[in-house]
Amino acid sequence: RSMPLYEALWNQGLTIPGGTCPAVCISGLTLGGGYGLLSRLFGMTCDNLLEVEMVTARGETIRANDNQHSDLLWACRGGGGGSFGVITSLTFRVHSIENVTRYRMTWDFDDLKKVVRYWQSWAPYADPRLTSLLALPAQNQGDLRVSGVFVGSEEALKWTLRPLQEATQPKTAEFHSTTWIEAARQVAGIPVTQELFKNSSAYAYAPLSDEALNVLIHNLQTAPGPVNVVAFDACGGTISQVPENATAFVHRKALFVAQYQSYWTQNADADKNIQWIERFRRSMLPYTEGAYRNYCDSMIVNWPAAYFGKNLAGLMQVKQTYDPENLFRFEQSIPIYT
Image (cartoon, one colour):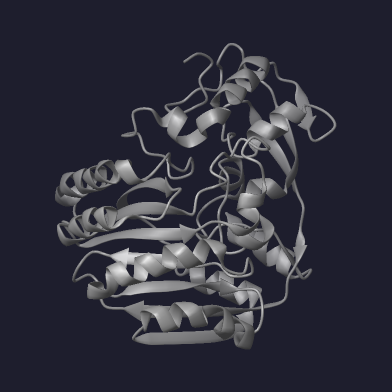
């Protein structure tokens, strides 16, 4: 799990740009890309991966870094996750960090168009020290909310957020200065022991049009319950400064990633929630591109292109080099042939 690593690094005044969920293990997070509260400042988790130690299909232990097996390191930066061998060690670049400021703003559901219109034109271009997460719960399931972390003072954060506040007039706005590790703990929340859920994702490479927002609202008005939400996580900043072919993670130019989410407690509610997610995802396809590897979804038929885009060919070549007999295979492992 990731949180013990963040805790150990914090004791040295250091961190890596990890994820937001404490139950996610650092290896899977990294090998699939890795987005979190520090990604716009320090890059994706995979961008901070310097070396992997791997046991190959032939039983050999090799190290992949910029000087040897660099093709394998390239693949593990966003396209790894069990397709090439058994990863036994990861080496990261670390960053100094001290205090941060958390924030949260809320709006009524009726403000959705106004909020999304402004947020999508602002959040991907804001100060890279700022991470902005926009949550849009289904109608009658709670307030719209923007939250996140700013690596800086409360005063500087308020200045950075002023355009959003003035344009959208939130009904509440809260700011809390704290240490980085406390912010990570608070965002992570209480670990979930068991949950029935269905998630999927897509990237927005252009602002959502009024037509797209109408589709979005319709889906949120027809949710099955009890907990249905779409979350927008702002990209830009350091994420977008890395060339699309520099790592296997290809979605560098996206403005934000959308995560469609359903949660339920009764098995009888599974089908209607799963179908709602799939209808939502499909209805947004005219306005979105691709999907995020770490929000894997078996219902995406052409998932290799969705996850990896133009980098798929390179990943298949690495697969052919290091696992030509396809020993490491699973439902969404990197294929040898298309």
